[in-house]
Image (cartoon, rainbow, N blue to C red; front, side, top):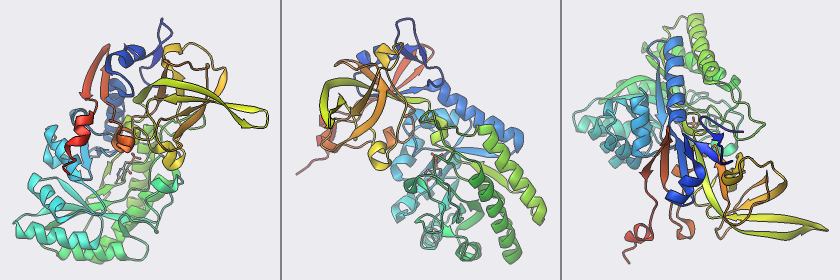
Length: 433
Ligand SMILES: Cc1ncc(COP(=O)(O)O)c(C=O)c1O
């Protein structure tokens, strides 16, 4: 299974963006995150063009929590996407990437006053309000500084995204948003309309991530139109914008068959249109805010194999452990929720798999990455883990004080370092004791 511009070249090596993955490992060291820039751009374009065709005026926002560095924010902005941020760090990165503040939405389920103030000061286009407490705080801060902030209210729509618990965010029992089902979201709309310093422009919901079926998205669109209609009857206010979140899944293995972006867009747009007509509501403008499906398949991680060990794993059974120079600190997802990926040997990509081996990390946890079928790895081989473009670089940590890997963008034969490798000096700079 290969993605985007990935192919096996004449040397029998994995190639991506026209660059030999083994050369990348030699030049930049391992572990290393590699992003196929053309694939990332192609996904951005697909979302924008599908949405513009189906619903002129609709917009796409890049959820930077999936993958962020200045180059990524810049790329998404160049492709016509708005930018979602959920912290001061994400906001600053977007601003330094010269993203227009007006195109930024500030998210987060606990925004501190200093963060709300920073968002106001930056002049972000939208704040997604996550609670009534936050709504009142933003109103207070905005009016105290003489501003009027455009906002959407994030709703918990009571929808199961049929995905992993850790990334299912739209149920009633969730920390995110304001509950629709018990009337709290409607009351928040009413209150928001009366608060100084805020201009309520629409409603928002995000039901989860790595969703592989369209049903939950259609249900979400239907429910949000219903809520907008009830709000309009109750208050006379009309939602001009429905932000329907991200969540489209990607391919992490042979069993995953994610719907195409075009199918998602058609489903959402048709449902909003039909549901609006059915209840006599002017169809609101639609925004989608994908992360994983923009960049996940465009990214891969390269590791170098260290020790290879055969150990007893049961009666008359053995298991081969292949230890790589990364693991938990550059990719917590396998330990967090059993994530799996396509894996191959970048330097022996033309060889067929002959052994089931357990690829393990080098942290002081049992940070097994995965059991996979590979040609029997040898020390020095390069393991390529595919589909790691989303929630790997951004979820990396310094466990065991390992330094976080660099990010390299590849495109048409060129490799461009966009995030350098962390150093031990970087790690110790904060240590002032
Ligand atoms: C509010 C919000 N929008 C969008 C996203 C992006 O989701 P995904 O990466 O699954 O597209 C997330 C991620 O969890 C989110 O919390």
